[in-house]
Image (tube, rainbow, N blue to C red; front, side):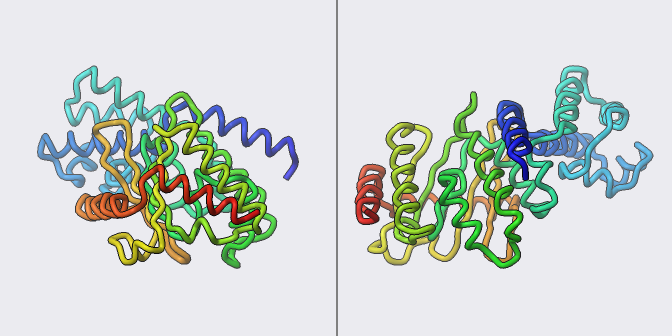
Length: 302
């Protein structure tokens, strides 16, 4: 990929980081339409019949996975008897959902579910994540990210490495925009000691992590789960909890392991993950002790 193409992609990412996420806007639009349909006692089948469309289309819109043209939104507004003020809000969401975002340029290298996750991440207000062996993508240096991606699964082509690294760096712009993303991480001690990319890359990564913790303590909170903690509630696999600025939107869970990715939105399951994270955070080292351990391991890499 040419340098100009790379810079163009980064520029689009920077511009989009200041706008609401189209995927989150489509999701909120769908939730609000579904809530209104249920308030007036219509089934999805009946709503589709009244609008002259099939039930699957109604369900797709309500899940945020199908884009809604302006004329069809007007039809729903009429059928659901939505007042003018709310209709204007829904049209604003619909228009935003139709906008192209920076992640659209990566649809050829990432699966659809990961593309959706990028949209949710871009629109989130707070991310809580638990990870055991690898630094969270939002907190990685470019060299560390490149080493992780190059050493990843055999399904990643070498020709894709640069674009995957680029996309990870664009994601990090959410940490610096007008409404910066808050990140709370419980990090396994193994992630500090696994020499991804070699000692020099790892030392730089740990110094980067320590710098973010000290320069932005209200935004970046990292708690290390030491080996000495033994068994704890989150032991077994990484996950992320995403919270959003709109009170209408519930939390989501993102889980990514070797051969499986999933967005979990069932409220009972999300609550289980939230409780698990809170318990793991309580058992991890405090912020000050975590920072001291990170700096200690960084020195060991010299």
